[in-house]
Image (cartoon, rainbow, N blue to C red; front, side):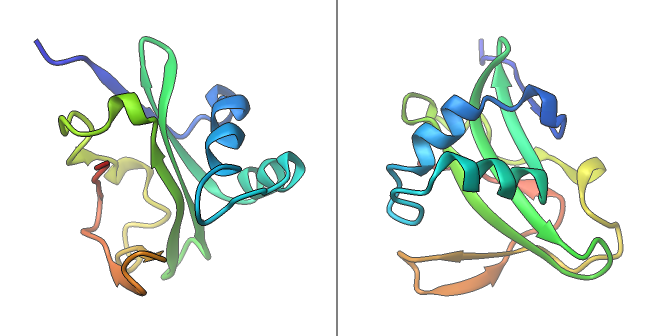
Length: 125
């Protein structure tokens, strides 16, 4: 039986210890101060993925809430990577705007930004 994950945009549920702990050691946000993480969360549409109330993944979207969205700081806690349990979760009800273009994600390891499938979150390790 697959574990039951929940995806939420409720900012009150976000675990700042998990988020800051991961980001400050990531290659793209190494050393980022907690105060900067807190400010970035306040000014973004954030998604948390939860298993039994434990936050296991995070992503945030910076958007004009009309036509532009930029996906950032996407991660899955290492022990939950791989099996694809979060892959393809429908997040369309929480998109910045139904009329917006697909969000963009820039990755240092790919060297370019690309459009993501609208309304889908794909979390892979």
